[in-house]
Amino acid sequence: MMNALWVSKTGLEAQDLALTTVSNNLANVSTTGFKKDRPVFEDLIYQIQRQPGANSSADSRLPSGLQLGTGVRTAGTQKVFTTGSLEITDQPLDIAVNGRGFFQILMPDGNIGYTRDGTFHINNEGTVVNVNGYPLEPQIVIPELTNNLTISEDGIVQATMFGDPTPQDLGQIETIDFINPAGLQAAGGNLFLETAASGAPLAGVPGEDGFGRVVQGALENSNVEVVEELVKMITVQRAYEMNSKVVSAADQMLQFLTQNT
Image (cartoon, rainbow, N blue to C red; front, side, top):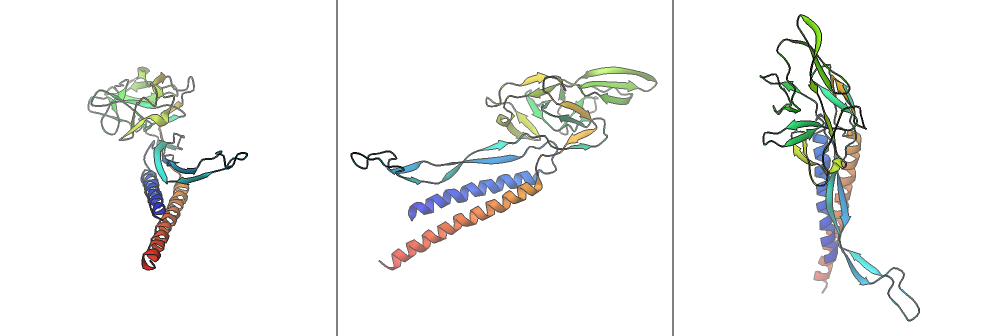
């Protein structure tokens, strides 16, 4: 009975973390480029009281043995990098990657962050930056007298000036991919950081070698499915209730023993 209490305790902790993951997904249902999380659980070590395959007699073996589990723990959380739906905004500096790939953002500490959020702006120097003012890498500067800004599917940025219909090349948007995007470190602010698990960044041209194409005037929505998360929330709630029932049952059994001995 004491073992049952500790096993159910691990179940309560696991379901609490699962609910935290669901709540974070739902909180970011409107976050541009957000990728949902899913918790990964694993069972804890087993108490082997009778070894499977051990001899039960000179000529026979135990078919299954006696193994008692000690509960569950959270092995990790995994980012799910499926592509979210594209929302047309018609804003010239809203950019989405339709497929694999990340934009590069130059962080204040000099490191490179990676994002699927293509909500870009222009700062007071004409440099293309994200919502926090961090510049897109490689940097692109928009001239003052720009009349029309065009970004092609392969990331070429061109501008036409007032009084001059000839397009001027301003630069090339590069996209970055990883062999294991789920291994990236979520840094907040819609940014990810490279880790040993993600592998080295692989630079490429949008639309080539498996990289997604760039879509101007569009943003990628969060890939969170509200109905799916609500179903998960109900499942977590019921699992939590069942584990709490085990705690109550073990407590009642212990109470019976203490009152009748």
